[in-house]
Amino acid sequence: MKRVFRGLFRVLKWLLISVVALEVLSFLAIVGSNYILYGHAREGSRAVYDAYTLFLQPHGLRPTAYNSMSEDPEKNRRVWAFGGSTMRGATPLSDRTIPSCVSMLLNSNRNGLHFSVYNCGVNSFNSLLETKYLQKMLINLEPPDVIIFFDGANDVKYFLEHRDPQAHHGYRRVRALIESYYQSWFGLLKPLNAAVYASFTKELYDKIMQVAVPVNVDSPEFASMMDAVEKRYDYINKLASAYGSRFILFWQPTLWVEDCTVAPFVKAGEKNLILDDERWATVRNNFTLPYNKLAERLANKEYFVNFRRILCDRQVPCYQPDGVHLTDDGRLAVADFMTTVLKEKLQLDLPDSIADR
Image 1 (cartoon, rainbow, N blue to C red):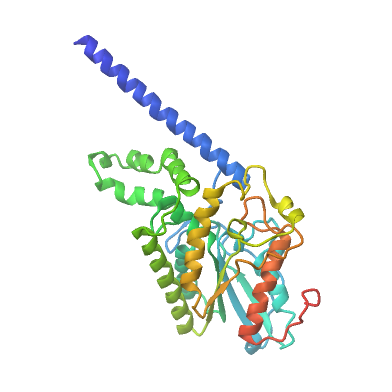
Image 2: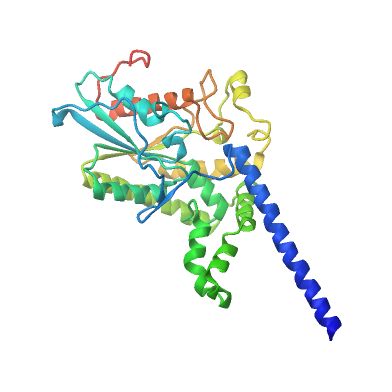
């Protein structure tokens, strides 16, 4: 009998050691990939809980440079710009974000109008969380004249990770906290059970799903995601109209979905030895297929503007090494294209040259 218990103890001991070792290795893999992709140990940035959106940046809206206000309310126009970290600005300088550049360009108008652009970008947000954030803003503030969403990358990213139409940043951890209690008797140990469901091993599994497991665009989950995204944007368009605002969805450019020829010296300046979009065929296909399918679904919407190819003619590096975030030149170029669209939709009199603006 002692031999049986000794053998059972040995099995349990090595099982526990294996589980801990797997978790430690997964932790190291996650931290290493975060350093490669983002330059620091954690994905995303420091956040605080928010009842409307799950989380927000601690300091709220990022300041926007070049905003202008008139004493005459009839001459003032407000623009809310939603998106993820690309909209918020992957730069320490707030005057070089996309909203700041848009504000600078819009305020060169010759209509006598004064524009204030609000940077509502939040790191790691996709359209699902942005919609909740918009609802919060409309409840608490006077509605704007224009509502901008700058989307694409994060909607694709979180679907690839979780293969769920309602996926978002922190999806698994939040589900674990809420659902694990009643899933099994083990759920009575709520903190431990939630930790298991939100483990680094499961997070590593999600990362592998994103970069190594080909996406099936014929799956029911993908069809549900397409329907959910379309309905979400249609709802936002109706909501904006009800408040007297104009909604514009800009489908963001990324290096991973480019299908055009770019000057070789520019491509060389944007490449990273590890993050090379031409070597990672599965990653490129995984991002491109959902990105294009969503763009095709939304193509005929009056609010949709496809920015996929706007940076094809660039003569300087516009992408950071991760292929999603933009350099100073990239943000200015995107802002210029946005301003051109706003010029047409708002019938603004703006200088033709960005230098004149």
